[in-house]
Length: 204
Image 1 (tube, one colour):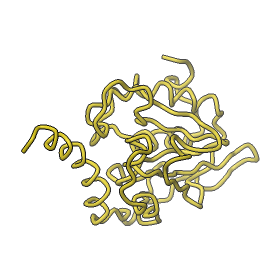
Image 2 (cartoon, rainbow, N blue to C red; image 1 turned 120 degrees about the horizontal axis):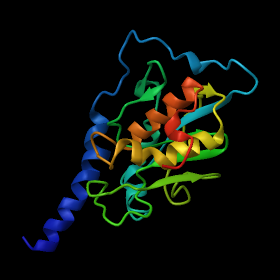
Image 3 (tube, helix red, strand yellow; image 1 turned 45 degrees about the horizontal axis):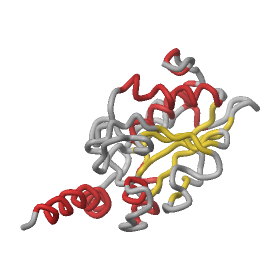
Image 4 (tube, rainbow, N blue to C red; image 1 turned 90 degrees about the vertical axis):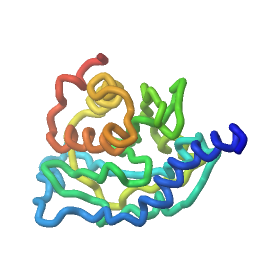
């Protein structure tokens, strides 16, 4: 087999795994876990925040590849976990983000990265804070969960700081150990705590 054919197959394998194989796995929540305390607003200053997802293949290729729309539409109650703060499963075959106070907060988008192969070689010094649409939202299918994950009085500036500093805190992108889902869960923990941590209060 020619070298270029091998390279093409290797580049498609991660998309096939993330968008075709993983949806057959059961991502249901673990039973018996208590609801997060931030799921009900406690003051007029509290704003709702939402988890959302975009087509993973489309986001990773900047709109050049659309494998299936199911990767976006599969979001449901079954993909939630209930802990101290609302969390989502970290191996869901989607690109995940947080929507809060009119902005989409994302990490691992590969925007500005010099090396990438479905994130496997992505230095992921990449984040996106956008209003109106999520990253590549004009090209890629996306969906926000209809019910707020929780409510928070944390400032918009704090979450911007968390997003910008996330890589400094956690290190480079890892498909299995530090991906967009881990980022969204971290932001959810900050929002649910109603406390802006030190690492979010200034650009590191």
